[in-house]
Length: 163
Length: 262
Image 1 (tube, rainbow over the protein chains, first blue to last red):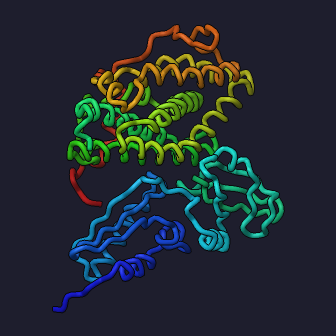
Image 2: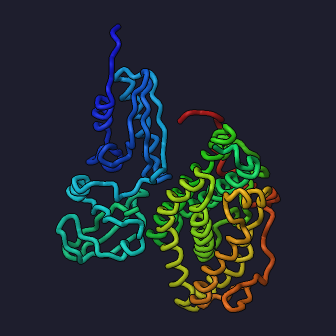
Image 3: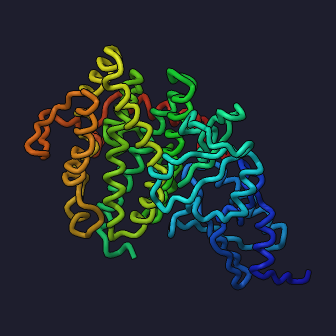
């Protein structure tokens, strides 16, 4: 059996096929959940940056990473987590936010750590773009979302919580 | 890295933090499907899930020092081995009690996590920064409810006041000293529970009194002294039947097949 030499880029390409189970339009790479990938002596180390600490999807993501890398031929996969710096929605780039919007989830505004000020700002409806919206529920169907209602197009929608 | 820190005291602190989050998380989860309105059902279910996540994070830090698995700590310990404060073990009660308890707990979390931002022990400092971002949603929610319900109607005032009367002495139990506390203060891990309690009162007393709720403290130019007996004991594993019932409940499924992989 020939030895497969995998580069960090190969690993990243494979990991960029895994999507967040609750937000299927974004990959773990676009979500900035994958902080770094290292390959050294057949050991692949993937460092993850958890989104919400209590998010049950984290276990699913880890299992997906393990099984996909095993299928690529990686024998020794180590998954580590880091909180330095903590994951924040400020890490999402504009392209990722646009994908959220197109999927019907209002993207999180930049917060720079000033959450209370940002939560007071108007939220644009992802469907009709009106800002005539109001908060229905500060908490939503998953830890990362809140529920808003658009008074213009009379549609309720989810908003990704800025953190 | 952790060798320079008082090991036993550090483990005691981490376990107390994890146990508090685990028990309150479970008590809050008891509202799932039972809250007075749908939005509160969703809110308390979310808050419960956040607290359980935070307990896992503190247990993981404990595991880094001891090698003990988080699941073993949560599901294999006897009820009288937990070191949570008694406050988080009481039944969910009236919804007003849940609201007041959550508010008093959330303010304590704010004070504690902000203090941890200066901790010399890096894992605590980093975990606190992460948790604090999520906690912003909890405090906004519980504080908003206290402010609205405190003087909304005669009934809401009466029920909120009854809740404060019961919950305030219990809440003081969050600040019971842990074993080895002085060593932790000396090592710069955290400023100690007496300091945290004083800071906590500077936040909660004005909010509660602003919501027309009487608090058992004496105010001397903004310095508050407690006029009631704290419900201490939890940190010394001196618990009551409420924790026994809670642990029986939360470990029931695990005990059917210990160590099973789901």
